[in-house]
Image (cartoon, rainbow, N blue to C red; front, side, top):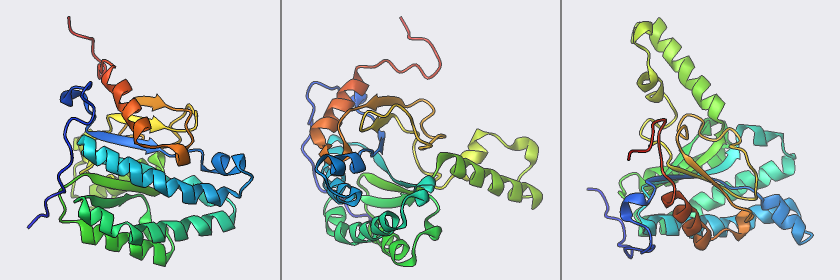
Length: 253
């Protein structure tokens, strides 16, 4: 039996119509290193501080009724960072996966990962997989961590699977369309992203969910990720609600 999510207050943003709340949000969490340097600390201190931002943002998103929240935590390019920093990040991810299980269960959240998870260190991978297993029957907001992830890599991996299926005769090459490729992405159940939030003033998508953000609205804030809190998420949602989404068409009227 599915576990019911904890009840959350309704109408957190009374000035935003319920129909204008994005169903799916993706966040590019940037600025941890700059935040740490601002205090004269090592970069890794910023990663630790960012955990509080993850926790508060996830709670706020669930309270707003967001269906899916995807956080860009570690890209395929991030392996180029200093070994000490990467090792620290892997341990931080392992600890996060374990420490947040009670919070995830309490709020009925479904925890998932997105990316080449099998290439992560064994202890980190095991902790993440166990948190996924424990929360699989919840029916609240889906919280995804994009780890060892790249948008181009995801599309290339899906294309490889399509090629294998075509060679094996499981699919006719002439029948391949967008839906066929989407079914072979890392998480075929993932919704298209409505809103992308990028922190730390950077004006780029950094290889994040290239397939899923095709028609997403993008909001950039100058707030560094460790300083990001629910009020900043609310501001991004209000900005999203103020826009007219066209999906390649024209505004009616």
